[in-house]
Image (cartoon, rainbow, N blue to C red; front, side, top):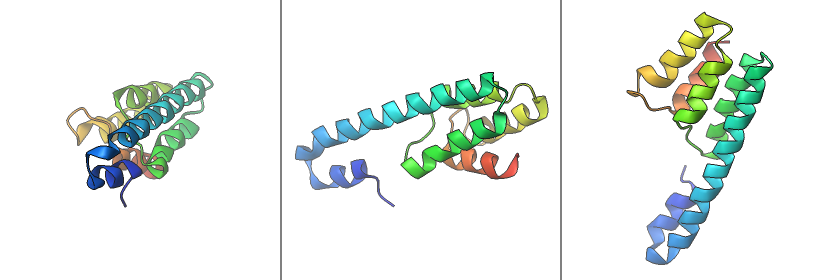
Length: 110
């Protein structure tokens, strides 16, 4: 499935403004998600924090290192869960958070 940014990129240079708008929207969605993950972690709600990160996939937004780190911190009260989350997010991708990893964590670690 193509995101709107990919579809606009395919039509040519005139689409540049829309790609930037999509990028800005993705950045705002990611910031809001990261903030929510931190809040959930502060309340000890690790499973909900995992679901929050996994929800980014439905918005076609790839988690960044900030969101992934916030999630690992949210899970830190349960070191086994934190290690599992860390391994899923960072192990396979060499330090990059990935949406597919977030979904596996959301479905498997809880």
